[in-house]
Amino acid sequence: MGADQRRESPGAAGAHGRGRGSEGARRAGGFGASDARRRSPSADMAGQRRRPRADAGRLMAWLVKDINERATAAENTRKSMQPYIERTLQYAMPWRHPRAKSGAIFEGLFDASGLHGAHKFPGRVQADVTPPSQRWYQLEAGPLVAEDQREAVNRKLDFATTVSQRVLDASGFHKASKESYADLGVGTGALLGLEGDDNEIMRWSAVPPWQLGIEEGPSGRIDNVYWRRAYPAWQLARLWPDAKWPEAVRTKILAGSRDAVQLLQASYYDHDIRAWRYVVVCCEQAQPGETVWEGINRTNPWNVFRWWTTPDSPWGIGPLMLTLPDIMTANKAVEMILKAAAYALVPPLMVSHDGVVNPDTLRIAPHALIRVARTGGPMGSSIQPLEMNGRVDLAQLALQDVRQSIAQHTLSRQLPPESAAVRSPTEIVERMRDFAFDTGSAFGSLNYEYVPNIVSRVLDICDKKKIPGMDFEALKIDQLVLQVKITGPLARSQTLTDVESTVRYLELLKSIGGQELLTAIAKVEDLHRLAPMMAVPSWVNREAVDRDKLLGAMGEAAAQGAGMPAPEAPQGGQPQLSLVA
Image 1 (cartoon, rainbow, N blue to C red):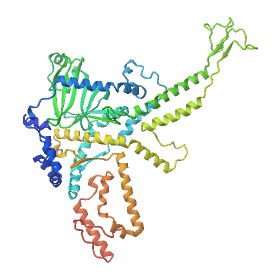
Image 2: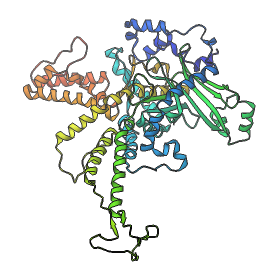
Image 3: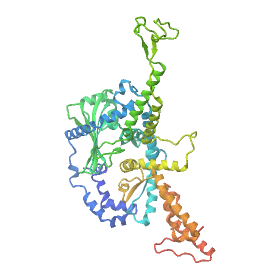
Image 4: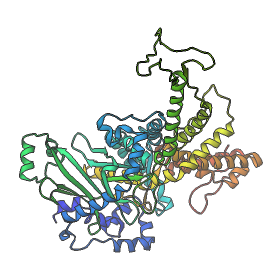
């Protein structure tokens, strides 16, 4: 394996990122975490376990036969969920149902509650997790970094956070992610992030998950993804310019043909080289096909994330699928209400069998003349409307409850309109707490298997593009030395609870004993640590050296003004703020 190949393969270069080799020392020194590395024997053991094998260059990838067998097994697992997925699409996103190609996409739909929920859900998730043009994550020092080095490390990482955010904003990520959030409403979303050309750093694509075969790894994340898809021949040269196509396919490519070429794309984790292999198999010839292109990625190009999972299946279950019974009930209730209204407006007619009225020639229209035997009398008229007894108001009450349940499950429940009864602040706060309680576990899984993978993929591509200051080996996310902190609106609202508790505690101290008690009990000089909890950029706060000088000067001035000696610096080296109003 040559030097260039090792540059692209994390099996040789990336395996040292967790150990105590030269790269590990450089990374620790670059972010001030060398002491933490030296103090952690678990890091030494991890480095010994993760040292790449000497024969990594000779290791064989999976054979095409193995890829096809695993892809078929993963697709068979998907088939067990396919009926539920299609039924959910039928009532929530009928234009994506397999029968949508026939044109009858809204046949049998009478209520739009499922459609409205499918429309509002991805927007709500995007606004709460990955809002466009906002900072929704922050790279910062992990718990193993020494306390006196954390602030300097975070200032260095702020540059990487800003650059990676700009790359995401310019790469079409927000459009693709919102499309995948719509699939997440069914249960599973899938994003494919690939390296772009000189005009575009990255390319993000939202892939319908029900076209994929997925396999979970030992950690519970989706490590292996298989995607069968047909591409027009003229696109293949642009997608994989270095691929070695069969002669028949190459002829179509040179001719610019629009004929479909069947491909199987497999992305799987190779434990021997500790990297993800991306293989493109051309299935145009005899089975199982032949490999036409293969690449190695230090990070997983696929990001498959689930809303809610069960231990026996890799597929997720989303809010649209969970509330499908309510959606079907609302649809049937509206259908019955419409039928009752139709019967009330145009009721069925009862015609007596008197030999005069012929139902086959009977025409009911304005100013029409109908020949009948009688219009009244003891036996009644020859034509009478059939009375339909139904309680439409009860159906309306049931429909209202069902629609509220659908809105609650699809995160589209809103505050009451202004014309409604006035709601107390307590009720609004309780609604917000209910929302946080209902969505806490789901958003927690997104923070575990979605956001860190997105950030790692962006850092990897930025390093490949040789963007200054974006060294992937120094920016490896392990949540110990370098961690990703979620700072989106939802995570921020949760951390603001801690900030509010701290502020109330400080106000209580000041109200009881004034500024003297506040300064004596609380570490006022450390209140700058509240800034990360409020998603405030690190450049807002002064550096530690400047802050210590100003705090010392203010403390001396306050002590002289109060006729008291200036406070001495504690043994830890940081001066304390005393008697500062």
